[in-house]
Length: 127
Image 1 (cartoon, rainbow, N blue to C red):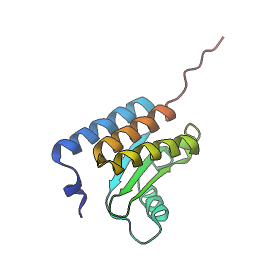
Image 2: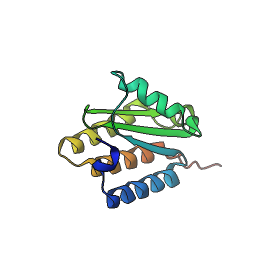
Image 3: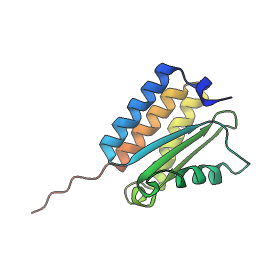
């Protein structure tokens, strides 16, 4: 099923807004791939997609294959300095629970917001 059939135009606009807000909050780039993964290894497919991004070191890719029931998050090297594996796992769990309830857009919005919040640079006070 093409990604266009999974989200309405209004949903795509809402997703774009969630991505823009995440990018402003974290200063990293966010991308979402919604569709079938090529091959059986969804992690490898998501990593290949991530590596094709303009600035992979500063990017977060969320890959969701609804029919294959797979969700992968790939983070670049710069992002990993601010975002732990445990924080990514929590976001994937939150997305997966929404997906299971049939809430694709809400799951993506929630996951993007969580990832951006955790990746946000910490304010430091200097004496």
